[in-house]
Amino acid sequence: MRWCKSTKVIFVVLFSTAIFTVTIHKVPYGHFKDLVNNSMVERFLHGEPCACMERCLAASDDMWFAEHFKKDVPPVLSLNNSAFPDHIFKWWQSLQSRSKANYSQVITELFSVIPGEEWYRDDGPSRCRTCAVVGNSGNLLGSYYGPIIDNHDFVFRMNKAPVEGYEKDVGSRTTHRIMYPESATHLDNNTHLVLLPFKTLDIQWVTSALTDGSIKRTRFKVIDKLQANKDKVMVMHPAFMHYVHNTWLHIKSRRSYPSTGFLVLIFALHICDEVSVFGFGSNSKGTWHHYFEKTPKSFKRTGKHSGGIEHETILELQERKLIDLYTGW
Ligand SMILES: *[C@@H]1O[C@H](CO)[C@@H](O)[C@H](O)[C@H]1NC(C)=O
Ligand SMILES: *[C@@H]1O[C@H](CO)[C@@H](O)[C@H](O)[C@H]1NC(C)=O
Ligand SMILES: *[C@@H]1O[C@H](CO)[C@@H](O)[C@H](O)[C@H]1NC(C)=O
Image (cartoon, rainbow, N blue to C red; front, side, top):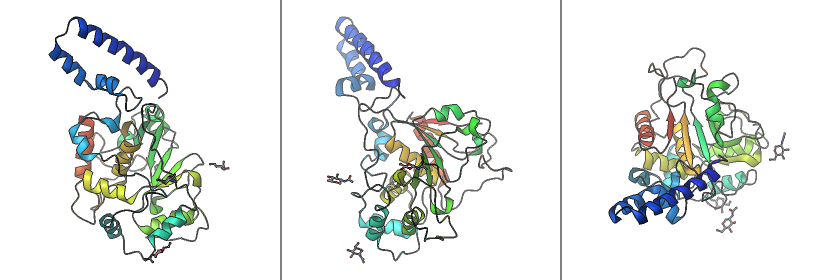
């Protein structure tokens, strides 16, 4: 947020002046070392990884986080990074019924329609990007989180999750909507579409849906002509999905893959400096349902998602103060 940086500069100046004054006059050397280990001072002495007050995710010194977070895995497909290792390609292909399409041709066609640039490789000392990941849980109802959610730079929503009529609880802004062909919905001109490609055909679909609309079915009938701003469309990198599957969830089974919500959460960790998470998990009565379902049914997770590990990982991230988890109502 805009005020962060100047406030922080003042704070750092005051804080460091205070430390050095104290150090020189009163504190013995051992204590000085403790102070220097403080990450705030570390940042001051070694240059700052980002401009946020609270945290800079990519620069976290948490050991558990460092074991999971691989900064170099590209979150989004680009012209330059679309080739990836064989074993990952095999994994990705195993999620789908075998595709006869020529992947490199599919990619060439994709980037003749959407931008092929590297998105969001702009982290550094002058950036403080705050992000809200908004899941679809019924625990949002009655939460009054709307204004808190809207106060983030990026607001991520998933699939068809509506905003209209739920603004006070879920907010009104959407900067990114993450979806796959079977869950797609039309977007306004300012919203980024982030496609989750579970199969080659999904990439072919987005190319088609933004142009001639020739693909009308994937697993079933889908939107053939999508309203969306072509210049704001991106495709999550299949290698990123593999990394979430392998490194974050340690999933052994080939046929299971991460949920959309979890993929988006890790995506946010990679492109944002601070991440707040809303609308994940059950409500206070232990019921799982979508906030936009009129009559909440008990919501059963599908066998393909690994809800248990995902939930534990989110709690771990919260415990280690790497995200702010809003548990709702
Ligand atoms: C896929 O298409 C590219 C050209 O875009 C071609 O060079 C390559 O040989 C093709 N691969 C296969 C397996 O057909
Ligand atoms: C791709 O990489 C080359 C060199 O690594 C670079 O010069 C070029 O700008 C990159 N293209 C895009 C679209 O990012
Ligand atoms: C949407 O935005 C693009 C630029 O990204 C612009 O060229 C186009 O005219 C806009 N369309 C509408 C309907 O506002």
